[in-house]
Image (tube, rainbow over all chains, first blue to last red; front, side):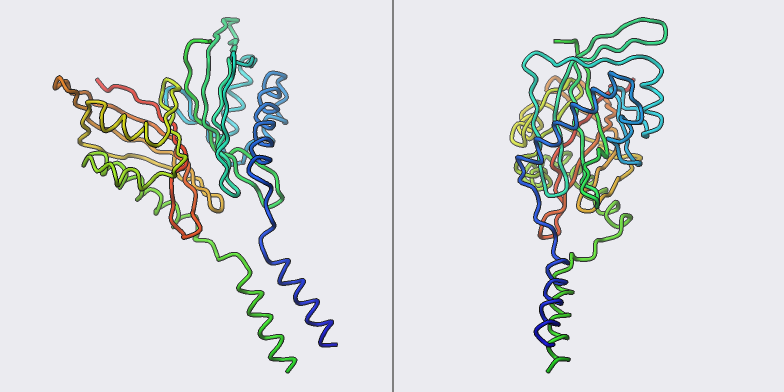
Length: 150
Length: 150
């Protein structure tokens, strides 16, 4: 009886320990894949998919310093069309710290407004991702800079 | 005997649980205080203090999309020929998720060039802070955009 009790309680102790995390390299790869999926969803105007990459409290900071919460950011995207294309020899880096990952990336972006006018720019971003309790990674905040397209 | 064993195992189970996290408001206040100290250190040209707020792999991204590692960021501040004064941080928001805190801040400062030219600048940033095992908060990445004030 005592042995069974000790065994069961030991399992409970183990269950209370934090789960062993993925390797940093695996997290970095997973985050980069999600970034690519996010941009693909924007290019396809799949707004429910776009929303799924962001935490409810997500904040986007634009090149002029204005901030947009998630719903307004999506509405802003919906006003025109945005297509991403890889920049020549795009560079990215992911800084991983436990349940935090910062994606430092770049791409070329073609945005077309409702008036049909297009803008092609090179954007550089810092995206902060956090791992939720259910193991998903969602983006909490993003800020980007824009320059002439490469 | 059984009671003592259960008590011991129970204590072990409690010890194995993650430490109770600080509440979000406390974290937000603490991180904002660190941002204020960081700004004050820049004004005081205390580069060792500036470095102490940053992780070894810290990356800064400016409004043109240029990335700098920690050493280059500090060297740019120290050797860039500018002095900073009247540094005042303004409105802010902190998004807290476990051991991650994203500081969405803004501030104004006076930059004085080698030629004595004085420029008042408004800056908007997204800084990602991570809690270390020892409880200390360090900034892992930051992106900012500056605008000259008239």
